Structure formats: structure tokens, C-alpha cells
Length: 148
Image (tube, rainbow, N blue to C red; front, side, top):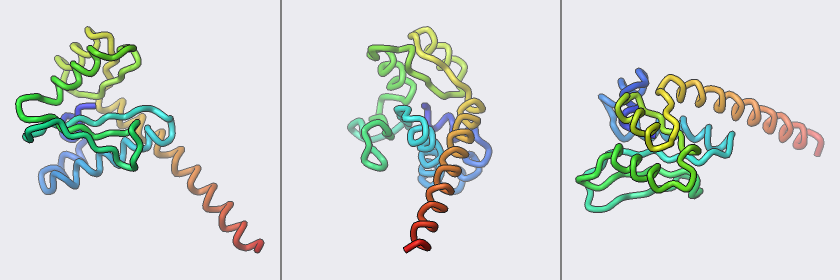
């Protein structure tokens, strides 16, 4: 997903982005982690960067959830296009962006384009399931502790 594009598309993150860029980025990553955790979907959030090299971080230590920051001279769009172009199964790649031109490029490369609103709905569904599971585990743990 195009991280900056989603940050600007989601009103609450856009407002946060104006005040604290790194906090907004971290909140986006936290939110989309529900898709990874609940649905076992590989998630890559790509941000434009300014460093000398491509930077890849794996929050939670799992290689199936990564945050990529591009080097100077490479945009997030460039990275996404190269990533889909090299994918063994481009059709399995879903790219969230509100950039219509980028979305069409993703589709032309064989990938799937989803809108920021569709991503938000997906995150909400996955997050809701995570919350329900956690509540169930909490109740089960409480019951086990009471029964000791």
C-alpha cells in the first residue's frame, strides 16, 4: 500500500499527519496490522524516503508484515510498480491507493487496486474480529485464574 497516499486519504490520519508525521505513520501501521494478524495476509506499507538505501522494517518481527521506506530518487509508486512487475503472481497483489493513475498502473501490471475507503472497511472488519477474539481470550484467562 502507498502509505503516504492512505495517510492523506483517511481524514483522522491526515489531521494527525499535519501535527506529527511519525505518529501518523505509526498509527497507520498499527491499524493495517489487523489485516495481517487476523487474515494472515502479507502486508507491505511503502513510504517515500530520502535516505541512501531502501529501508525495510518488520514490526513485530514477522517478515510477512513490513514497512518499506524508499531511497532518495525512488518513489513509493516506483517501488510498488517494480514489486508487482517482479511478483510471481501479480494478481495476488492488492495495492491500496487513492491515486487513480497509480491504481490503473497496478491493474495494467496484473495487480488489484483497492481504494482507501475499501482499505478502511477491510481494516475495520479485521480489527473487529481481532477485538472479539481478544475479548474471548481475556474471558477464558479470567475464568482459568478464578478456577485455580
